[in-house]
Length: 112
View 1 (cartoon, one colour):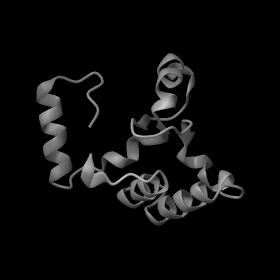
View 2 (cartoon, rainbow, N blue to C red; view 1 turned 90 degrees about the horizontal axis):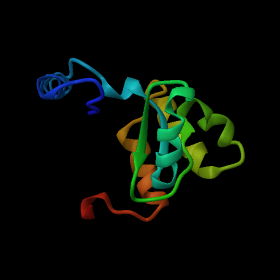
View 3 (cartoon, rainbow, N blue to C red; view 1 turned 90 degrees about the vertical axis):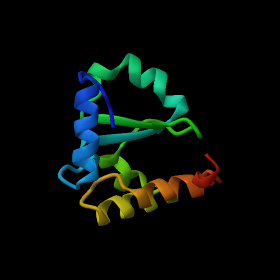
View 4 (cartoon, one colour; view 1 turned 180 degrees about the horizontal axis):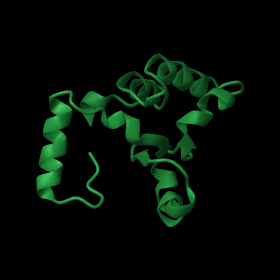
């Protein structure tokens, strides 16, 4: 959960609503990237369209719009898998897509 513009009470409420299945936080995620994309994404945030930018500190990956996965997947097997996973989940970032990334970069999430 992000805390942009919220206070602790907002975060507690958002976490509870998410845990109860009343909200789907994944609808806010529009881009995914790695640690190498954080600085540029932060500096250029106002000019990057969409919602939340989800970044992972465990690997390098350019900040990429989920909407671009399908096109990139025509030449990149990783993005093909990510596109297929997101398409199975109404175009949303999801646990399966995250597993695809972790597997691709040889990361065992249980060891994090």
